[in-house]
Image (cartoon, rainbow, N blue to C red; front, side):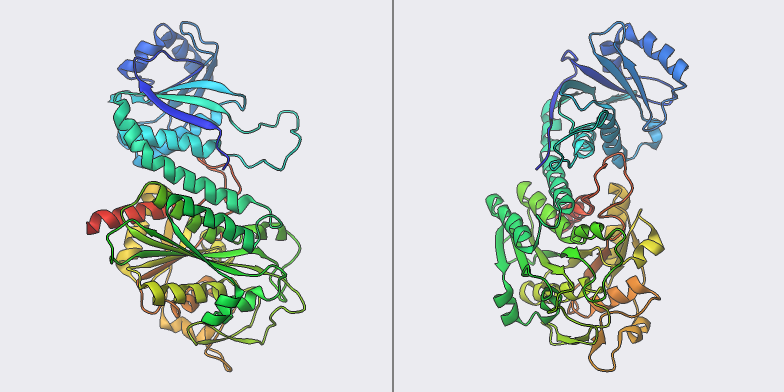
Amino acid sequence: MSDAVKVGFVAFSTAPRGVLVVFCDDALKFGEATRKALGKASDTVKRAAAANQFKGKSGSTLDIPAPEGIKADRLIVVGVGKAADIKEKDFLKFGGVTAGKLNAASEAVTVIAELPEGAMQADSAAAIASGLRLRAYKFDRYKTKKKDGENGELRADVSIAVEDVAAARKAFSPASHVVDGVIIARELVNEPPNVLYPVEFARRASQLKKLGVDVEVLDVKEMKKLGMGALLGVAQGSTQPGRTVVMRWNGGKKGDQPVAFVGKGVCFDTGGISIKGAASMEDMKGDMGGAACVVGLMHALAARKAKVNAIGAIGLVENMPDGNAQRPGDIVTSMSGQTIEIINTDAEGRLVLADVLWYVAKKFKPKFMVDLATLTGAIMVALGTEYAGMFSNNDELADRLSKIGTETGERVWRMPLGPEYDKQIDSQFADMKNTGGRHGGSITAAQFLQRFVDGTPWAHLDVAGTAMGAPKTDINHSWGSGYGVRLLDRLVAEYYEATK
């Protein structure tokens, strides 16, 4: 796991070293501890702010090299805007903005976690630390040379000065494990497909055993015995055999119903016989973003010892146009016994999910299930790359995901389901077709998946626009975003609080 930024917490009284980072509001006011640390440099800040038209807007920065009056190599002032307007997720942003201003070379950094009205709360300081680590992540392990001016991986030793060191450390402990989970998900999405194929993906997921997660890997023989004809139909065109990985974290009471998360893991998607165009096909290495999220989430839950029973299940395949690949017109039998006519082999993710969803619903009878999949281009037409599309058969689950999405910044937008869409996937020759045509493509895909949840409260997140190649943000400059780990970890935490 690529993570070269070390973050720790120190008292306000600790002397700053290296780069000093402080926060001010839109009136350029500082907190008491910050003013003490700045000393005579406060006048330097005022002059530099006037010269650079720095107004302290949220997320803006003022960079002062070799500031007079303090023993710091650089002074970075981060604006927080109006104090009354600051939201929980903004502290994560402030940490990301800070990391974005640091140099790639190794350096010592001191961040004074204080707002004009006083010290940041422990959770806010922990969010600063999380934002720093998330923004600092860079995937460049396959580069043997750096171009002139190209920044390498950030390496820094960051001390965050806080009012209560013990409280900040306690708050950051679980948060740091969630950050680890996000980085794991990013790593998986970023890996090239000749490195991360189904068997290797399953091996990496199996490393969760070190954290106490029970991991079972189903091979082709076992999946055939279970009747997973939909998933195996996709996998049969590749020389790389498919796998299903089932991860179980038993952190709750024995016998308590688990919560479940299912991920689409198409390690590379050519479209199969219904082959995609060549342009940007290389991006289809990221068609396993849902599965990557589930692995990252299970890491976070186990590492922070979440008091919940959780299932993470991922279906891993390659979709290739081999002579043995399934064809349009084929009919496959899913594990549920329902038959599916293949209309387009590029509508493969729903076939993988169909069998894994049914397996989880029947075997574990979860309290609820959430699946994640880079499923349709149609969701990007509808929502762009700012929101994941959410489909659900349960209003309570959908409302909770919407609320948490707004709080964390991993936003979802609820889309419709309804029996009126079923006619688009009705088949003349089988129980259903695997695609319903152009209109409402993301909706008919979700309508298809709903047939395999067996009445379990369920939400489907179409993350085609958010899991890979999404716009860069204050906390992510990676191609793989790790979308969903923070969202679903918070969902689990709130579920535990509501049921304990």
